[in-house]
Length: 465
Ligand SMILES: *Cc1c(COP(=O)(O)O)cnc(C)c1O
Image 1: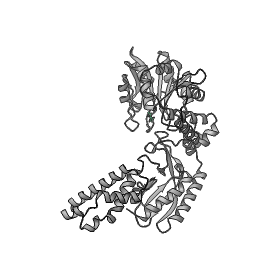
Image 2: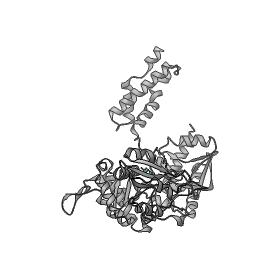
Image 3: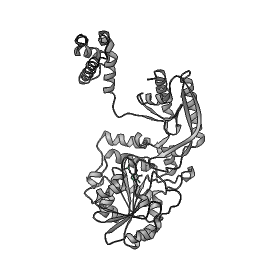
Image 4: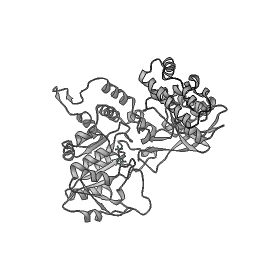
C-alpha cells in the first residue's frame, strides 16, 4: 500500500498538467482541484480500490483532474431546459421574464438609477412610486405597494392591520401552499390570532357572524391555490363577505396567491377571478405573486384601499421586506406590457405559454420530433402523444391544458436512466417520465432550445451512465 501512495503524482506535476489544459483558470481553483483529487485517490488506496500503480500515473488521473476543474469552473446557478410542461414551475424559477423586462434589468444593473431619487425635484424619492401608478391603472385600486414575495405581502398586511387582534378565516382556507407557507404559521408570526370558523367543506355567513368580537380586526379570504374541495361544500362568496365585513366596520383581506390581470376563460382556464374583479367585489386589500401567472419577477404585490395600503407603507417591517432595483425594473417593464391586452398575450412568456393554441403546439411537437428522429437515429425512437400541460404555481390546479408531447424511447438504455443522465448535461434537460418513454412538452420550450435539446439527448444516449 505504501508503494501505491508513493506512486501518486506530485501536486506540482498535476498543477502543471492543468495549467496547460486550462490556461485562463485561476491558480487557486487549479490547486484546490489537484488537492481534492489527490485526497480522493488516497482514500481510494486506503479503501483497497486501487489495484496497481498504473492507475495512479499522471496520464491516468488527468481526466479526473480535468473533471474536478470543470466542476469548479461551472457556476452553480445554471440555465435548465424545461420540457416538463409546467409553465410556472416553482423549482425551475417560475416565470421566464419578457424581453422588455430582461432589458430593463440590464439597464438597472449596469448603472446608477432613480431608484429613490425624484427627477422632478432632485430630492429623495420613493422606490414604490416607480410601479404604483401602473398598478393602480391596471387594477383599479386606490393604492399599491410591492414587497419581496407574496408571503411577505401577507405578513405585512396581517402585521399592519391585525396585530394583537383576531382575524376570521374559514377552515376550508387553512392552506399550506408548498415550500411550507402555511397561513396559520404566517398569521402567528404577524402577531394576529387566527379565529377559525366553519368546517373544512362548509362555511356559512352565520359562522363568521358568530366569531365576531371586539378584538376582530379583519376577515380574511385565502385562495385555496393548489387544491379544490369537490362534492358537498359551500363557502360565502367574497362579495357577500365584503358586505358583511363592511357592515361591521372591518376590512376584507384576500391572499389571492397567483393573481392575474387577464381572464383566461377563452383558453379553457376557468374559475380564477382577475385582480380587478376581486377588488370590484369589494375586497379591501388583495395580495398576489409577481412571478406566478402575472409572469414577472419574484415580488409580492399589494393593492387596495388607500387607508390600509398607506398604513402598510408606514410599517417599519416594510424596510426588511422591500424589493431591490432589479425586481422593480423587471416588474415595471412587465406591467407596462399589460397596458395593451394583445401585447401582454404576445410578449409575456408565461401568458404566451398559457394561451398557446393546440395547432401551434402540434406544429412545434412535430418539428421537435422530426429533428430528434434525425439526430438520434439508432439511439432512440420519437413519437407524439396527446396529453396535458399544467399552469403550476398553485394556479388552476385541476385544469390541464391540452398539448402534444414528444415521447422518446431509448434503444439501448431505459427512460429512467436517460432522465437521470440529463440532469448532468450542459444544459440539464428536465422532462417527464412515463416508462418506457422520456417525454418533452413543447409548451415550456423555446424553438431556439431545440438544438441544445438534441445535442444533450445525443450525449446522454451515447454514453448511458
Ligand atoms: C403562492 C402562494 C403564496 C406564496 O407566494 P410567494 O410569492 O411564493 O411568496 C401565498 N399564498 C397563496 C394562496 C399562494 O398561492
